[in-house]
Amino acid sequence: MLLGAYAASIVKLFKEDQKVTTVLHHDVLQVTRSLLPIPAELLREIILLFLADAFFELVVTPDLDVNWDPLSPLLHTSFHFRQEFLAPDIQFLQSLECESPILWQARAFMLNTMYLRLLEARMPQLGEERYADLWTYIRRVNDTALSITDKMPASIRNAVFAPIQNHLYLSRHLVERIFIVQIVCIFCAVYWAAPEHVTGKNAPLAGLVSSLERGSKAVAEQGAELAKMGLKPDQWLPIPQAVLDAVSLPKCWGVLKGQISLPVKGDATRHQASGRVQDNATHQFGLRLRDHLSVVLSPDQKARCLTQGVEDIPLAWRRP
Image (cartoon, rainbow, N blue to C red):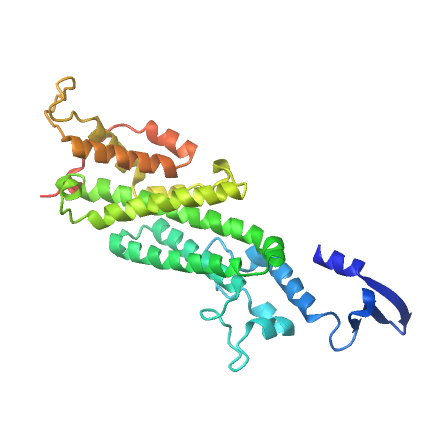
């Protein structure tokens, strides 16, 4: 589009020995096939447009076992790109300190993908605190990538970065939803047999509860942003089944379903043959966990969960 507008704004005067001389309307600037073939501002926009078109082949790869160095060919072949995006004194890529939206968005995509791969590799030994710390860092990088993009001129931002930003929002929204599933499964698998840990006034799990609430708020806000972009829920990225299996969602949903079905103390209308009961606070907390899961799962995933049978809390999950 920009190139078309540029071509329409120039008038070819003559050809002489394969040398083309052109001028802009109103004689604003003369451009020839010499040292600088076209204006530097247009070169920058061409580079950005090229990167937008090639972004997903260059940066977003489905696996992390590849050498993540997608920009090297472009850096070595494009003098103008090096002038724009390299620190002039040391000629190193300004990856952390620079304000290049391309590089920051690439970094955000890479971290989101890394988080998915960690979960798919079934690495719960990192512990929920490590995962929470990691996701806090990933959120910060995502926020920086989006804020730097917002500083770009509107014409470039809309033409170049809107498609990339849509994918970044979808990617971030996916990982936020995975974080919710992960926390709920931690509650079901580790702490559910001791509900006083989540319902007591000075509960040691208050941090995880607040993380769950913040994460759910972030998911809702991002869902609203996606709606503004015209991205409906059926266009959201579904949580990979490998991730759901890694956090034992089917088993956790069955345990949660069984816990919710227990009679509440003082409710004479319900009866449980095993004699197990729960207090109202624990029952309400279970309903909240179920609601959190229902929001972040796709319709197909929710349908599969609803067919999940009731499971008792495995002995290995019970606290002594």
